[in-house]
Image 1: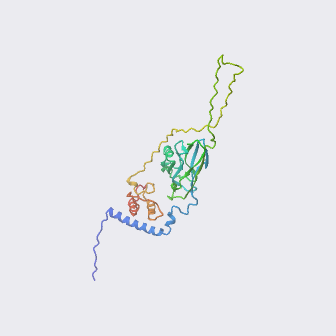
Image 2: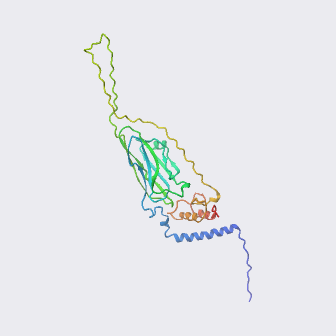
Image 3: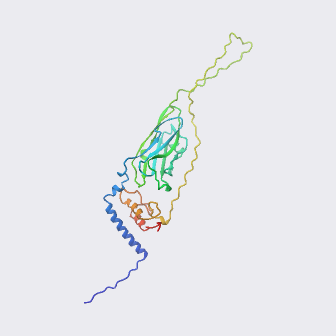
Length: 318
């Protein structure tokens, strides 16, 4: 009985073929992980999950104010125990009654200023826009609890009695925590009373002029000495003025490294690893991250996942 022995051929694997095999193996592992997590993926990545016990609150302090005199208003946020990394909020006011007298000063808790209205923009539109984010240098210590986001000073633009408010726009409130989850928010507006002590018009009477009589006209018995006419004093009417705006230099943005070694680094730790793959998996479920455009083609799909896998280990300390 003859045994048929087939001649074995030796395949030479180039580095490119080895890399493709690694990609296929890793894709299989990721697919199995995705199937095993499919049942509870919604609860894990729902941006408004049950983990948030109470809403994050925007509010103004003081809650009510009387102007004049000029009043400094503080925009506050109470994030409870959440580690806040991004906030967006817009305030509206009646620019026919109220005006800002200085530029908006922002907090040192969220030092990256993405958008901040100038004094001229706010007074022209009656809207203050503010978008702040956690600075890269502060990522080890994100803010928690209640703290100030910004402050500005207001003055009346009218001289008559009136009421107004500063309103927080509910359609422009957004808060994101450390886990990239969007928080549920609530707010409280501010009431303002303008010129409560304003009364009638200011009266400035004409002074009585004393005329020195001539010798022919002078008759001591008939001459009547003038009496002093008292002034009627009243609260002065506020004068409208255009203050010189304070100069606040715009912050210089911190350049973000755009080197090949960091391509695929989704969480900014300068190391392409399985954490970046896990973050990119969010795009495979509607309750996950909003973007995972690792290859910068304007889309978030499996090509971005492959893009990260092919760059595993880049930038990591070995």
